[in-house]
Length: 209
Length: 209
Image (cartoon, rainbow over all chains, first blue to last red; front, side, top):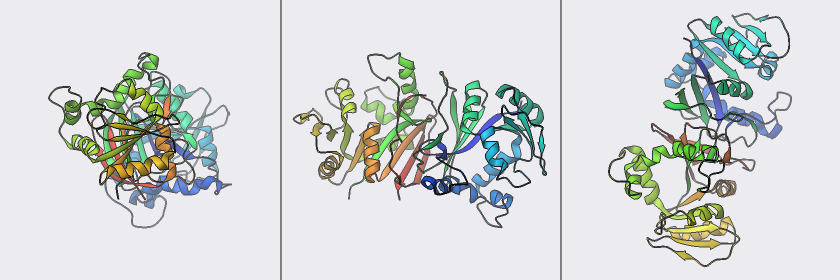
């Protein structure tokens, strides 16, 4: 069966986004600098540079292979409404998913088809229904729980996250959105699978026990 | 000059101790199980087994070397009053520090000399004074900020922590004492130095920029 995975960058103090991160206010508590420090490892990868049309160059080692693998394995995405709303105003016309994306929301809305293979489906029946649809759509590829924090927490609490991939960057945000809060007891159990030691982040891969 | 370092085990959700961790109530939210999962890597090391008189056996690889190095490099410890209070009732007569220990407290108390080279000094003049005394006592060895969280935070905020060593265990505590909160802005900056990939914890070593 296909796998459900999370692949996310995290600050050393556990935030996946700094406080007040909106394009409208880039100066708020230096969120732009913090975000840059969190994501530096990714923007240095050759695969990412190519995708974002940053031009040639970039790293081509195991972290680059991991980034490529993450994109290639993904047959469907699930995300929350807040993440979608932020993306709707900032993604290019060719949204960067190239797969079905299931958006958890109370809003009723027809599917939104983008060029390049991304279609957004708006799901009102909760996370389990979204996952069932995503599994079907993904075929023999995998399902990525894209975010935000609250959506990842919901799927962790459902006990369906098979793989948890965290790029831990040596940066402190101080405030923002914590990834691992609101977990039910007993919490899901993971073991260490692999660790990739990058210069700007440590890539921790955990699998469900 | 000697170095100031932190060496601490951390849950994946950022806690250094689970909620309600007192010997009086081992059943509280399964703190004993959680603590065991956090510390499993350490109790498997040959050096630790020998120290704790657990008998022969144990791992003898790079993690064991790291544990030995941590003990051998330490010329003085600094800790908070809560950590001392918990230890006072649970350490063996030969307290496990074998060096001067500076306890940050408002309580006035004469130095407490234990067999085996540990003497506790009770410092009422704040963290900077404790560090000055610890530096002097440590000679060419290093100063370990032992804990708890609030004391580590104070020294991080003073900008004097040279090395931050975190044993990150794949366990969720859900509640307890968070390590990296209450940091001032701008937060101290670290870069990744080394990563040791253990079976039960990932040993992340950061150095101050």
